[in-house]
Length: 376
Image 1 (cartoon, rainbow, N blue to C red):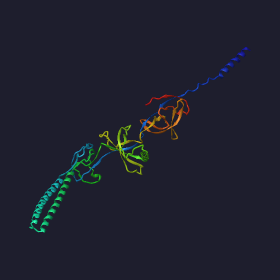
Image 2: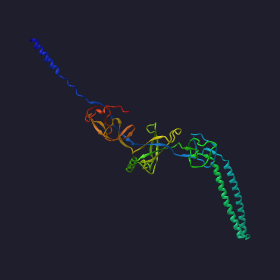
Image 3: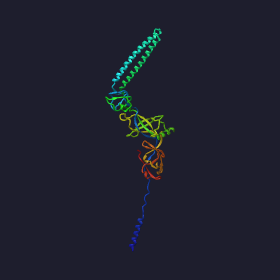
Image 4: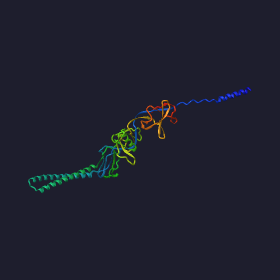
């Protein structure tokens, strides 16, 4: 009997012990990294794509016909204005010039003789030694000799010009292409591609030409009317250029031209940036470039890293940490990138803390443990 009672007591004690549960500890604040909002003066940039183009470009063509006898340039070399490029056989034109020069000398001699006879006729006419008709003949002879002399001089000058054209010189300084017409070939003046001897393009300064879209142009017009941005038509606006393998737009120039019409086919306006060629030996017209232009006057705005920004149905927001370490969802209006960070036009202030990690776990009103993240 005693054994039964003891066994029942043991079973009761075991049952009571198995029913007891230890309560889990209350969860603490969620550890998250935070970044501090920085406010400073920013420039809002607009970016466009374009191509480098030469300031000056010339197709070298002959002005007289003849056979090429000399070539005085190396393909791809830098040449100066006035450098000799080609020589066309000058002998026929030298002969024409000599003939015209001799004819001019003959006409000069006849004019001199006609002048002497006219002066003598004037003297005799005052003495009534010759008739008025004879005097008129001498005056007419002088006028004919003067006209013939002028025509001979014009022919001489034309022959001299043709002789000069046998030496083809560069009208600009720049880089020359290859010789498209080689020694011994006959060349003739003309507008066709077959008459091009070579080309020369200037290398410094250089243009970056771009097409601005209609929305950007309308924005600039509005800002100009509000006095927040100067017009590129009245002042030279700074612009910054980078090649396809560059970053941070290291090359500075100015917008020196905006076209007078918007192309209805593309909805763009052509513009031009002029800048110094930073490497004339290698940078040539045709390179693809990106161009950055100030979209508005400088203003103060908050800056944050892109990684702290979330988006829902087109609305961008961040989780801001309040003084009691609870978080709230804050809708923000963003701008472009400035110095590697996103411009925030509204929604954040200088010195506020925003959460940068574990964003998927956050809910408004949660308590967090903010841990400052090292700024990059």
